[in-house]
Amino acid sequence: MTRFEDEWRARFERFARAHHDEASISGWSETGLVRRVLLFRSLIAAARPGPPPVALELGCGAGTYVRILAGLGYRAFGLDYSLPSLDRAVAADPGRKGHYLAGDAYALPSRAGEVDLVVSIGVLQALSHPERALAEMARVLRPGGTLLVEALNSRSLADRARRLHARLRRLPPRPQRPHSHSLVCRNPPRTYTN
Image (cartoon, rainbow, N blue to C red; front, side):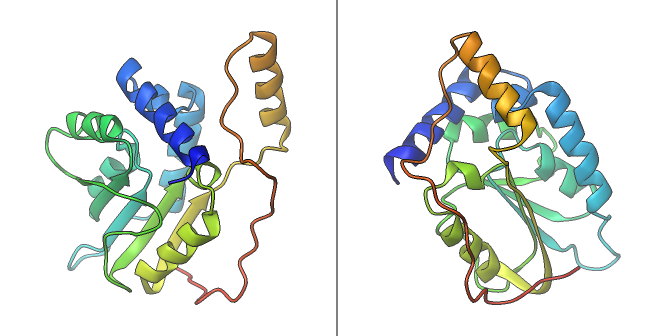
């Protein structure tokens, strides 16, 4: 793990230890989490009858989406590198609808082509090598499966306003990549559709 990733991990561990609400544990505002959940629910359909499809959420934090997926009939797994976040996810899931694993975005605990749905919300900005994580997501996804990724845009008006607010309030800055680069996926292994 790089220093950049260590800083993000420490940030999420600090959030999980300091907060009890799901939004703060994941580093979102309450409004931001509500918006994301509504969008997520509009994008993901309930599982069809038959054996439950397998869903993996990379960077599950407090387990919000894992529980939603399980409620929709998926065999849902949440993976996170923050043990305090995983503790919060398990505590928020007393019925054990989801399964929670400690792990790394660069080495997903699944065989190739084993997962029907991979979800990654707000994870790529916390990785030094997001292209490696995307390749790993593609590896575990079955042909015809679905990959759902939300990547933050640091150039958006909302993010610029957040940075200005943080600077004016003298809040600590978010970890930044040591150098700026564009994410380019050359020769992707497959294109997946629903």
